[in-house]
Image 1 (cartoon, one colour):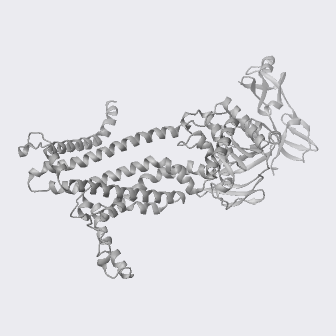
Image 2 (tube, each protein chain N blue to C red; image 1 turned 90 degrees about the horizontal axis):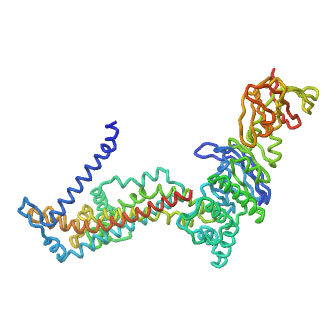
Image 3 (cartoon, rainbow over the protein chains, first blue to last red; image 1 turned 120 degrees about the vertical axis):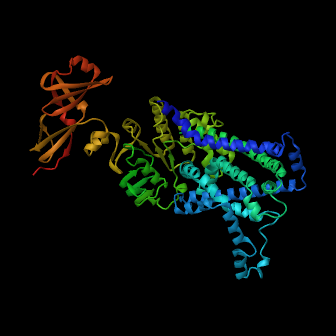
Length: 293
Length: 343
């Protein structure tokens, strides 16, 4: 009897441990960003590191660069993912093997994605060679510099390749479900498949699509691998700045790195709040939809 | 619209659901498609509406084949069992959906929606959200939305199944009224035999992906073509016997008939059987009191026979379980099914 009562808590234990680990890490990071590192003799809390981070000359450019690459890649990936879902749903191919193929990039590590992007999109890459081969350009150096540029085109392309399948994975089953019932109803009332999709299925998937967008946006904002491997020397993305400070041989740079991470956390928390508000709205909408049956 | 279906076969996930359905619906007719859950009723109307692929056979509307016509151009509108109102739209937008697709002027749309809301007895409900409606109101909105699409054929897929008895009756009357007023051709799916008999001009009885029988309510009730068709409309007593020289003989007696000589089974409804108090030969082995009526189970030479009596008649008879009674049948109401001759 006692074992049965304890079962739910035991089942939750791994999740609780992981959450505790995350919260402890976050607290330690925030503590360090406030100058609390007793091992280095820093025991007085201070906002100096934040002040220093915010007054850094390249800070605004770094924030804008991070926001731009994250937002543009998330927007393009979301649009592409929704487009792929629409084609799959309307052509009733949501259970095809093709869907498995579309989802394949989710399993590919970001470092490998960076390598693939270099192999494909650099001026020595496959696309440049093909363009040269087919006479579209005279020399490979004429191929547009997509990597290591100030606009982060390479970073955006790599994120789009990686995140589009995530959106497909995240949205497809719900979209197929809605299209199979309410979308079908719209068709029955006289709408063509695309009009039914745009007027009924897509609006009802809106919150899920927005949730997917926010997840990949926040991820791209906080991840450093792709901007580090494919980004320009300047401006640098916020997580790259934090990483550079973090690995600095002088440990006194650690609070400064954590303050930069704090800025990323702040933007992420704002996004998470938006996500939470969306989820609450979605739950209410689901309850409402349940009431129509 | 006149609908004609011939030898229709439809598969779902490689399993054949409809096995050669033949069915005709006359212009302006209300046909009830009656059958147990899972017999293929919904599959049939979704096939008519073009929402399912047809393996073989033909569906014709006014003589023209509907196969190959996209569902949005067929003019066959379904009111689904789960209603499927669009939750992100108001009542007005739901009803006006098909008119917005046709780009009808806003003023005309508003007039039509208001008129339809009056037709379904919900005037002034246009601005309500779907979540603010009761189950019965949702049914009405779904019906109004279907009517707004100006269907050539209205297909109702058990739209009253979620309602209580009072609302079911009310909605049934409303559907029949609107069907007559608007001169629609309507197919109503139901598994409620009373509803089918009460509302329909004709009833098509369906079982295991086939139409067992189609006819007027009176025909299908009094002249079932098989035991399965007969059994669908309630209990029936089957009396095996033999016809010879214009007389049918069974354990209950013999009476004149117009059957060819050979083995037959006479099927007689419980209310065409009569217990004879003071008689003998049958023992009362069960009494099911149903309120206005009661069903007696009488066991004797003909086996266990069900006999229906009014509650008042039962009280007058003074019968109790274990008592003895006689039993008579009204042979004029018997339906006969030919049996295979034993060799």
